[in-house]
Length: 105
Length: 114
Figure 1: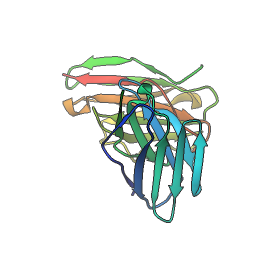
Figure 2: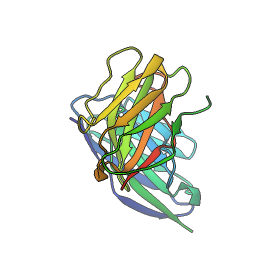
Figure 3: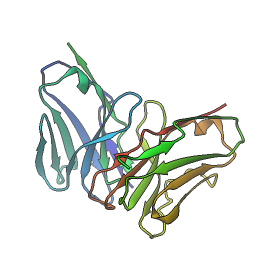
């Protein structure tokens, strides 16, 4: 089976940098993905790591260390619109419980 | 279509009734997934279709839940004899391949069982 752990809540101020961690335990591994979900909305894809290292997509970056079973999502230059829930996912069938990010002015 | 379409967007039903939820994936996407999301929770995998292969039903919580995908496109999730604990948002997603391409989600169906 698989399980992922991520913090339930994170708060940061506008313009800051925030890191959301995700640790996983899996019997098989198909990469780590990150999704953003605004209240009442559909999850949208942010980033995917199949191999170790950093993937950068604009203000968002994601990192994976398979030896440590650990990854993180890094959000830079935070904006108010970044307030949302962020989910890490191993493959397509196992999602973390989500981290609620609140960006304050 | 431009995105994954789900209907209805909201469904209120009485305990014990059957419900059908529909998902129309992005054209050309061979993989289709159903998830359930309770308020403030993560996504619970229900079932996965890939092309013409037998579906992966390992996430279905009970035999009251079933799904089919006709012609490799539209999918219907059926919940029989609904219970109050079935109340949740049911999300459908599609992707172009099974493992490595991103999921594209619909807006979900909010099911309320009274």
